[in-house]
Length: 239
Image (cartoon, rainbow, N blue to C red):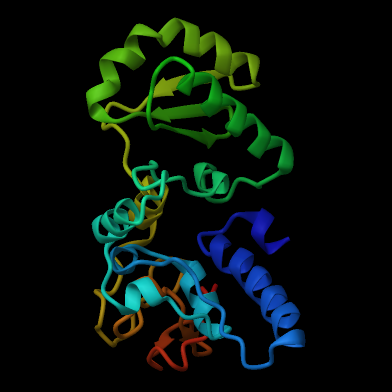
């Protein structure tokens, strides 16, 4: 239910469930097993509520710990002969749903079908973002002319999938754009590595020391942050 409610800490609830189940299953057979994920050093520059769940369950991030950014990961994958070395970034489909709107299986299937239909027209990467009755299409800036050339066809396709209004975002594709929209509504985040108390509207947030992707804090009775550091940060948004 917390995941489907689609608050800004949606990813925390997803990862918390996944890591808990993985840890329980794995440690039944290998009590000393360590879970690892694929987070790289560049991921720490963005808001990552799921990172808080990783810290809670002791998940390690070897790529990040070794200082690999996205370019280094791709270079290593290419060196090893992996065919997916240049595969475009592919975030969870739920990231296309505006915060506060419920995430459902049917909606995710609609978004998946919409992106597949538009990619068939020659786009290498895009996002179809759901805003209720309106859908917002993001494509790389260099492919805006291609998108405009298919505008009428795309309108028909997406209306057939249930949206009333179809829009094209002239700013182009921005990874994490939904998080930036949320930031505009709750103020700025604490800079990575700082310790302090910040309140952003109805959401309390703090970036833990050395882990800018962790937006979790322990809040006091007034909803203010109590700095605890990475090791103790429980990694949850406090309402």
